[in-house]
Image (tube, rainbow, N blue to C red; front, top):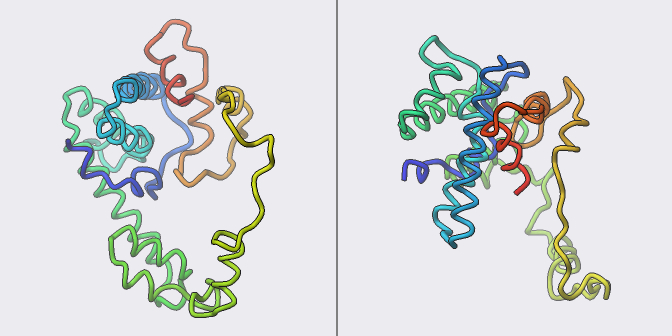
Length: 229
C-alpha cells in the first residue's frame, strides 16, 4: 500500500541524478530486485489483480531512481536502499526518493530567475506534477503552444483526430493479429556510452550492465526477463 503514494508521473520520469557507473555488486543486487518485482508483477497480471499490477508497474518504473540515484550521504546510498528493501521498509524507501525528487525538480526549474526566462512547457509539466492545474494552464505560452481559442486549431484537430477524420486503417491491419515478441536484450546490447537518456532518465550504461551474462546467478538473470514484459 505504500506504493499508492507514488505518483505515476514521478515514478516514470524523475529528475534525480542516476550515475552512469556502478559497482558490480550494486548492479547484481539491483538486477535481483528487478527480477523479484517482475515476478510479482507477472503473478498479478496472471491472476487478474489489476490493483496489484498497477502498484508493481509504478514500482518497476521507479526502481532505477528509487535505488540507484546518486548517494547524498553515507546513510543514503544504493546499498542502504537495498537494505531498506530487504527489511520491507518500502514506505521509508519511497519517502527518501520523493524528497530527492522534489529537490531535483526545484533545482531544475529554478535555473531561470524569472518565469519568463523558463520554457513554458517545462513549467507546465512542473505545475502538473504538483497538481496545480491553473498555474500549468497559465504557464503555457500561446506563441509556442497551439491556441485552443483559434478556430483553425480546433478544425485541424478535428481533421486529425475527430469526427472529420476519414482515413481508415489498411485492411491488412484489421482483425486479429498474432502477438509480436521482442527481446530487448539485443536492443540493450547496442546502446552506446555517454548518450542521452529517455523520459525515465535512466542512462544506457545501466541497461547494458544489466544485460550482462549472469551464468552463476539465476536471480540476477531474471532482471532482464522483467524488461521483456
